[in-house]
Length: 183
Image 1 (cartoon, rainbow, N blue to C red):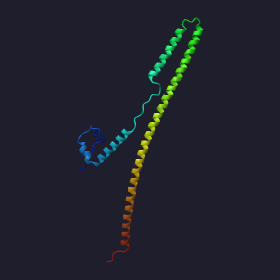
Image 2 (spheres, one colour):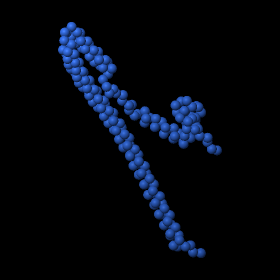
Image 3 (cartoon, rainbow, N blue to C red):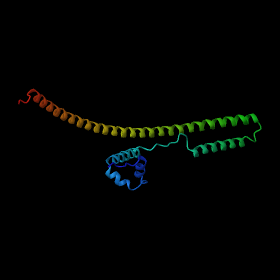
Image 4 (tube, rainbow, N blue to C red):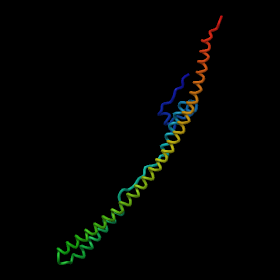
């Protein structure tokens, strides 16, 4: 009697607890389906063990930017108010221009330093994450190599055994043909 196997979709649904409950008995009895389910569960565990992507900001946080803009407008307002009663418009413009340029240069330098610090921190976090992932990958690679070596040793041992058995059979056949039975 041939066994009707469930579709891969039904097996996946069953793994997630959404499929028919009758599949439990089938998976327990059927080695092929049980092996497929174990392979998928192993893959799911491997994917769950991978590190989550790191989310990072590349620019200064919004409150810092808003504070910088507010400070700029405050200084600009104070400067313009201070010189509003000045009699010389040219002196006023020159003073406002130089003050604004100094403040913009200072803010630019401060934002650049904040950006550089944030960028360096993000790079350090990335390096640490990549290093952990590489170590994990290397450990898995070493484990797989060990399994492959053990498998190859088993194949070699079985092949040696089969060669010896074949050699003995050939010797028996050669002996039987060399000395034909006499009647």
